[in-house]
Image (tube, rainbow over the protein chains, first blue to last red):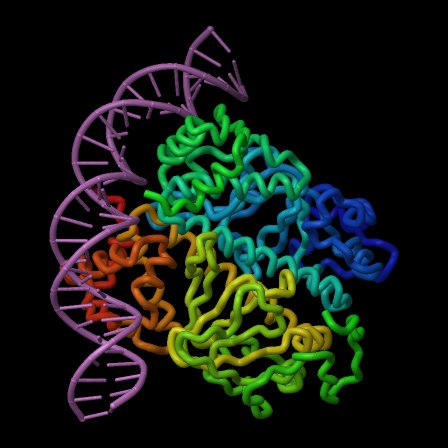
Length: 263
Length: 263
DNA sequence: CGGGCCATTGAAGTATGTCAAAGTTTGTGG
DNA sequence: CCACAAACTTTGACATACTTCAATGGCCCG
């Protein structure tokens, strides 16, 4: 492991020793107080934490890591050391199936945290792959835990973030279990639109970063069915599609399509 | 919620005041050290925690709550105060859908913890309903947090439990996204068999506590398809089914059926 | 400019949802 | 403890939705 970051990152206060290998992440160390003014802190650890927790975030030694499109941020089975927070870009998290294929579990956008699954057994249970050139903050877990031991606020924020992810996973599970593929695709568009809006982008018009195959895998249907559903919604005038560019024309139409119990 | 965070350091050993309403659960209080010798502690908070954490568990004021078959343990939208740990029995957790129906998200068995989703917004995001007469330990969250502030071991155990649930949710999501209902039903049987085995019951023969409709909702298919798949597996000699009683005769058959890419 | 990846669309056979009815099990009250 | 009602399960039939295979065309990157 390379270690030259150590001096730069650790601030004035009692620096923690970087115990063992990989205690500090590789990549560009964050400048002090970076979390406090981060554009996506609202979704991340840095939200509304008190003075102490803010200082701890600086001492933890978070580093920004770049991942090129198609490259993994971490891989299923790999030893777990870091949680990640997406700073810019998009990733998919996936699980490999018995027959060697890949199953997409979820998509991660700026502000989302990922890697929690690694806490359970000390190894990542999933693979995270960049869907476009992406930057993520690597948060060394051991050191984060030491910070949590010193700050109740930080600890509670972490717990709350994990719980928030669980809530979103619940919604996702509901979406995926819709009976008809058409409902799932409509639901996916609405979900994505909501994610964009939460992050300050347009809810009406956006570029999907994932392939039809990824969407199909996520929704438990074939890529052809995804494509056909999109074409159908376009024909009905609910959306406009051109490859990955989507424009929503009638949210209500999609909403009905996502839950219609019709015939 | 009620009381501004009474900042840690409540000079150890004495019982915490029960701040505000509902700080302590109703139900039968656990005797001291109950967690330490609990039959399902391996899955729960009480596993391998140190002496201090053990004492904290006693001070937190956990109470055993009984829920009759069909009754809710908590309900979507209800204010969150307690995490629960299943002591005996089975529950389903569900989300209500736009059209007033119910979507089953997961099943909870002895040792499983539930209610984490309430941490995110201070309200439960799901409903938990007993599938048979059930007993669960109600863990007051505010007080648990105070315990976590005093014991890093307890805090880390909680974090690990949440992470474990996330890992299981991932597997569940993969199962639910299988293309063919038959794969999903086979996967469900294997999953259930595994859950039984983990808990020391027979992996080969068990009684399902949930209805075909619940299974269908969970798997995103109709109850008729669940029934037909089970009948099919029985005809192929993989299992024996009589109403909710299931005996597994050929695990390998099921395993193939759960992931077969055949025609 | 060409090659590879991705998206769209068609056709055909299969899987699944829905409706319907009959058979079981479970729970309740006499 | 029995009888009856309600809830649940199984099975059939049919229309529809979906997967798969296949072919075509568009788009992006080097």
